[in-house]
Image (cartoon, rainbow, N blue to C red; front, side):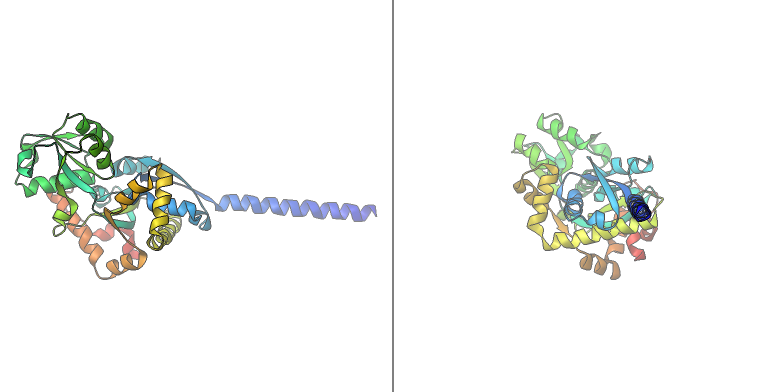
Length: 319
């Protein structure tokens, strides 16, 4: 009897040890990932879905998210080793094009950017000599540059003042700047203080010249296995977003602590992509055209010395 008890105890210890090994293996298989985002619909929706639908866990990933005010800050954090992946708007696509990041997935086509001015300024030509706030290297920078070019103005014809987005909101509201290149939903905050502001330019004014894709990016050294898992999650979230637009708005509102009404209005400013549409755009050359067109713009804007082949920085071509 004693021998039987001893044998059972030994077997129990073996089972517990095996369970311990399984737990340790489970922990080892769960990769930690840090992911940056911007607190708007474009930047948040896929991350909110992935979290709610437990898509990260399905790929063995443990993801922590951190909010940023713009894309360039995230690329800087990635190059410093403080961030694995992030989200950028169209104005920051020059960063992967210049070799500072890789685009792992496109997300949407933005239409949230505006050039705004104080009441009384009714035409782009009237910006000459005016003080204009702009977040450098962002889509606000991009829309302002395009607008000035359309008006026949150079950067030297205006007083461009580099500002972070939050500073633009307060500076415009206080009347400290005459105009700005900025985007929704921040523009809603500005409008609350300055309801009579004037919108002088928007993305769709330049649809024939350049597209405005938003994207998810990684650092330049891309861990293939991890990035494959991240990309798969983003693709699953894209299709869930397409099938559940109302639920997605609620998830974004909860994650960003915003009202459903505000997020609904923000979502209307962009065209969301699903995987079938995106894969079709890759296959027929549309994505190549978008990125090449943006490269031409960035060369003309002085952000790039030359226009690189998009295949050098967009990983979606290798699918």
